[in-house]
Image 1 (cartoon, one colour):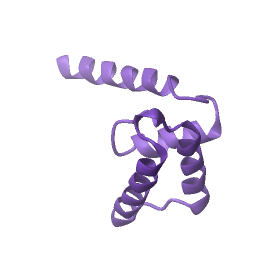
Image 2 (spheres, helix red, strand yellow):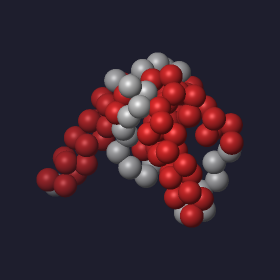
Image 3 (cartoon, helix red, strand yellow):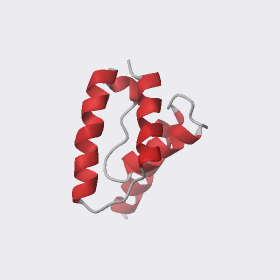
Image 4 (tube, one colour):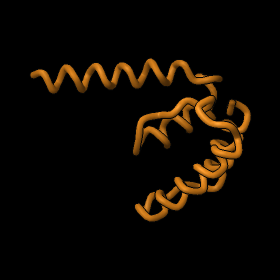
Amino acid sequence: MRGIWLLLLLSLAGNAWAMDLPEADSEAARLFAARCSACHALPHPKRLDWPHWRHMLRVMKRRIEERGVDMEGAEWRQIAAYLRRHAR
């Protein structure tokens, strides 16, 4: 039972974090949240500056391809543009 409550609290915390995203209602923010949180905790765009985000996107692209997950180029470009706009 304790595990269920912990899972519920973590999911609510994750949703609260997503609501703090810049342009939270935009397609780009939703895409960023959906794609990135599928594998790990969602980082805030202001966590890194743009050069570091660009590097991390390359690393994540390689990891995603290794897992066999298909992600369109348009999605990558939209996430990259979103992170570029909101990087610190």
